[in-house]
Length: 278
Ligand SMILES: [Zn+2]
Image 1 (cartoon, helix red, strand yellow):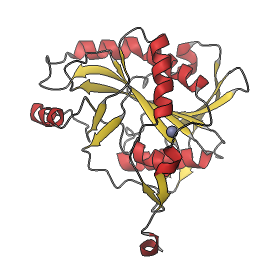
Image 2 (cartoon, rainbow, N blue to C red):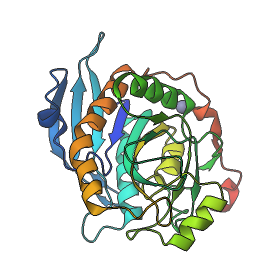
Image 3 (cartoon, rainbow, N blue to C red):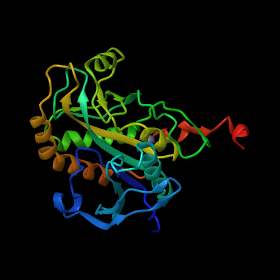
Image 4 (spheres, rainbow, N blue to C red):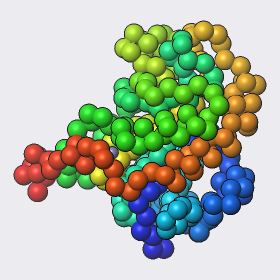
C-alpha cells in the first residue's frame, strides 16, 4: 500500500486508545479519509494507520494517525517504534503530536492535570532504537518549543482543568509500574512525571527531522507519592477524559503551522562517524 504524503501526525497513547476519533468526537470538521492502512516496512508490517482530514480556514489538512503501537503480540516495542517512524518519514511528516497517561512524581501535581513536558530522563534500555546511522542527534530542546506553545495556548482555552507548560518526563520500560524506591530515585533526580511513551519516539522524531511534542494527562500518583492510587479512579479518568483529550489534540493539529519557527531542524547534524559506517 502506498504511503500518503502528509505533513502532520498524531501518535495516540493510553488516553485516546479506545476511541474512534471521527465517530466518537462527532466534530463535523474531522473526517476519516482512509482507515485500516498497514504498510510494509524494513522492520515488519506497520500497525494500522488512519488518515484524517481536518477542515481548516485554508485547505483541508491531512493527519496521519496511529495508536499506541507497542501492544501487538509478537512485535517488540523497539520494532513497533521503528515501523511507525519509517512510515512517518516516508510520508514526509514534519510535525508530530503525541499523548499519553502519566504518573505524578511531583507532589504538586494531581490526577487530571495536563502537562506539556519540556525535557525528559530516559531510564529505559532502548536508547539504540533508530532507523539508520546517518545523523548525530542533539537532544537540546527535544520537545519542540513551538508545538509546546501551541498545545499550551489551546489547552488553556479548551481544557477546563490545570495545565502545566513544563515538566521533566521520566521514561521507563514497563510494562509494570515503578517501585516506590525507583520513584524516589526519579524524584531526587528532578523528575516530575513517569511514563513509558516518550522514548524512543523523541529520538526517532529527531532522526527523521520532524518536530515532536506531547501532552500528558496525570492519571495517578507514582508509588510512594501522596496516596496509593485507586484502580477505579484510573478507569474513571480514562473513560471520562478521553474525548476531551482527543478533541484538544484535534484543535492543536488544526492550527499548528506547517512551517515552524523553531530550531529543531538545526539539532540534527550529519554523523561524524560516517567513515566508520561506510
Ligand atoms: Zn520544532
